[in-house]
Image 1 (cartoon, rainbow, N blue to C red):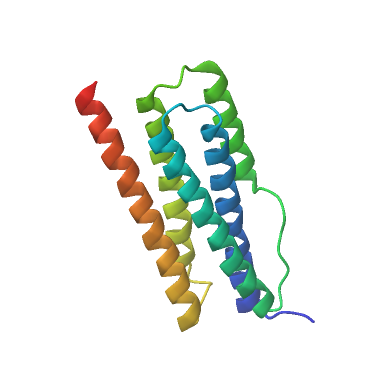
Image 2: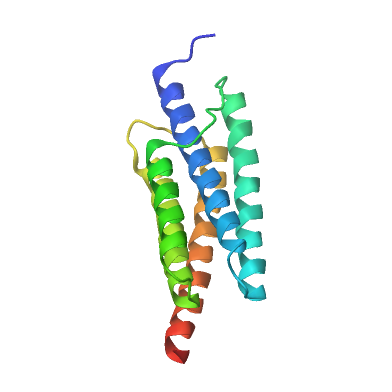
Length: 157
């Protein structure tokens, strides 16, 4: 079945958001392996779970639209993963540098969702809009949590 152009744009945007969520899972999984703080381990585990839930919902919409899931990281995701690996190996991870990384990660994720909303080529139906806005709000809340922890770490340093 051939998809029309607006539907193809939707499927492409949804696949991009899935890749961002996979990158988020990979990043936080790698960071859990290097941290000693239980509070951060629990928080990162929550973020990983959140991204798994997002992927499930986004995948359902891709199938509903008649599209296929694109497996693998985007080029930006590969660059992002290389940067994560480099910073993990070169720099001693302090709580502050770890939270800096997390703030960046959450900002990239929020930006990807905002880009999907702002793209004039993509027209979301009401149900998709509700779910995508919920994902974006969850990411904004995650960003706020990280920012709060980072600010507290700065005060105690």
